[in-house]
Image (spheres, rainbow, N blue to C red):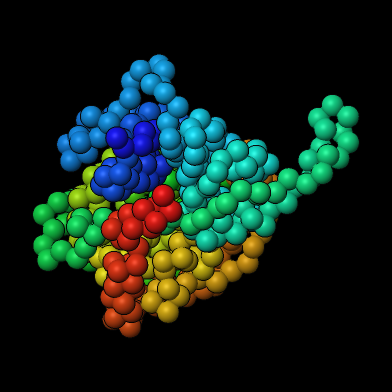
Length: 401
C-alpha cells in the first residue's frame, strides 16, 4: 500500500502558484510512489477553473479531495503557498514556496518554515534570504525582547522546471493574426503582472520599462514596438482599461509627439499559445526590469525560443539565466518604496533598481545590432533545456522525497 500524500495548493487557479502547483503535483504523481490526494485552494483574487478549461490537466480530477475531513493522518503533507500559511498536518510536513523577492523575509514566514520538517523554495536567492534573515522577537504585550527569530529547519532549492515539450522553437506560428497586422517588424515583449507601486517602484518595474522605452526611441526614424502581456489580477474589461490608463498616464510625461508604439495583450493564454507568442517572427527579445523574483518563470520559458533576453542582474531568475548568454542589466539595491510595501514586501527590505543608462543603451543596441546577441541566446536555450526542465525538476523532487 502506497503512503498517503496530501497536497494543499491553488492547483485550479490561473496564477503563477497555480502553474507551480500543477507541475509539482504532476511530478509527484508520475513518481508512482505515493497515493496522492489534492486539496484545492484559492490564490488571492486570481480566476478559478483552470483544470476544466485545459483538458490536458483533467487527469488531476481523480486526485482531488472534496471531503471536509482527511481519512487519516497522511504520511506526507505538503502545502504550496506562502510560508505564513504552513501548518504541520502529516507525519512528515513539506512547505513549498517561491520565496521572497527582497533581502528580508517577514517574521511570520520564518515561523511557518520552522513549523515544517522541510521547506522547498524556488531559487538560491530565496533560500539565501530565508537563511540570512535574523529578526528580533518582541513580546506584543510588554514590548520586551524575547530573543532572535531565524530559520531552524532544513530548506532546499527546487526550481520550477519548464515543459520542454511545449516551450521550444517553432518553424511556423499560426496564432496571433493581430501581430501580423501591426506595422513594426521588431517587437520587445514583457510578460508579468503590473501590481502596486509608483512608477519605477512596482515589483515588475513595468512603469519604468514603459518610460524608458518611450524615452529611448522618441523622435527616432526607425522604431521598434513594445508588447506588454500584462494585467493587474485577472482578465476583466475593467482590468484592461486600468492598464491602458496607466500606459497613457506615463505617455503624457514624455516630451514628444513622435513616440514608439506600445501594444497590450490582455487575457488568459494557454502554454501552447504563450510559446507561439514567444516564437512569433515579430517578437525579437524579452525585456524584464524586475526589482526581484522568487524564480521568474516567463524568463525561463521564453529563453527556450532561442531569442535574446534583457533582464535585471539580480534575484531568482539568475539561477537559470547565465549573464554571458543574456543582457544582464546592472544596478543597485534600494529599499522597498512605501507605495509597493505590504505585509510581504517589508519597507526595511531592499530590492533591485536597474541602472537607467544601461537600460536605454541595451534597448537601442539590441534593436540596432540584433545578430550580435542572437547566437548567445541559443546557448542560453541549451542551458535552460538541459538543466531546468520539468524532467530535471522531477528527478530533484524525487531525490528530496
